[in-house]
Image (cartoon, rainbow, N blue to C red; front, top):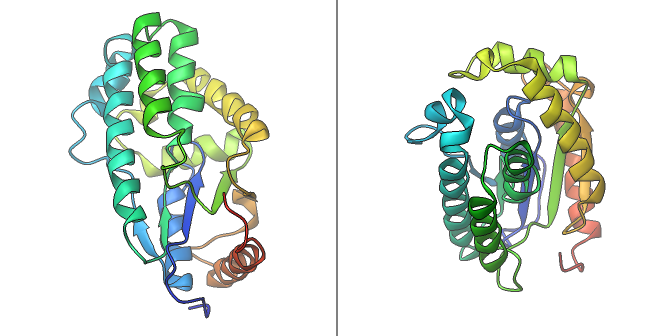
Length: 219
């Protein structure tokens, strides 16, 4: 474990495409920095499998569910003095998923407006706990799709490659304009936190250094 500062309510968010390894990465870094983890709620999600079967019918429901769950979890983190790392950011939902389904016609104008208004009221305020650092995991489309297939969660493996291609492009566009807090980009080909613990140690040390450097920065 890397020697870290005492608990002080630091928050790191890990962003990246479905299946790219956010949970595994967050767990490895949390163990080294002595952070607590906050994981995306998948088990018990009443809309996820339905969504992959019918985007148009369930896109709005799924996004509202994720918005509510992520907001509640972030509010819990904000009341703690512990340091946390979470395996998906709340900003990806509106910046990528909801926007994509609206533009593709699988979320109506009215539903998208309702979702966007809720997001603005809940998240884009001075009172919401924004992260101190956002870590963006990325790689080639082939490497990302391979990880999705290896994980094999639900209907993700049956989703057309064209869907992942579009999401991949949207992620790259989104992160290029993200400015809510500092961003650390990490290529998935540059580490293996499962089979090469040393690579995780090096990343954790770099993260700690960045957090120390930005300690006086309000994000």
